[in-house]
Length: 121
Image (cartoon, rainbow, N blue to C red; front, top):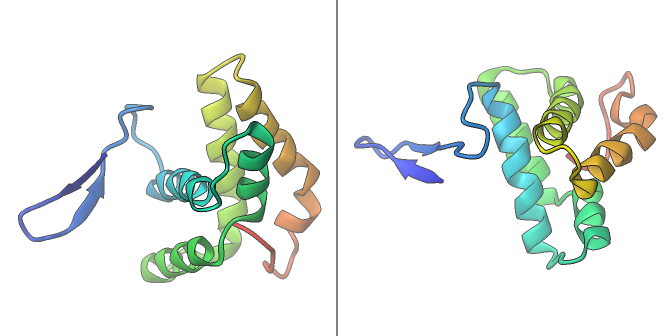
C-alpha cells in the first residue's frame, strides 16, 4: 500500500477504507499494525497489548509527523480514538476491533491528560 512518486515522496494508498480522511489517522492505523508485527503479536491478546503499549519508535514517528505539520500532539489521542472507532464501525461484528475501542475507553484519563503527556501512541 506504499507508493513513491517521481520526486521520491512516499505515499500510502488506503485500499481498506477507500475514503478521504485525516492523514494522521492513516499513520496511526499503520503504526498500530507495525507495533503488532514488531512485537510478534499473533493472538488477539498479544495484538491488543502491542496496540495499547505502542513502541518508542512509533511514538517518535508520530511526534515528528505532528511537529512537521504543526499539529499539537495533544490532538493525537482524539485521532487515535477516532481511527479505531471508525475502523470498528466499518467492520461490524469484529471482536478485536471492538476490543481496541474498549482498551482506549479504559485509558481515557491517561490518553486525555491536560498536560498532553501519555504512554503509547
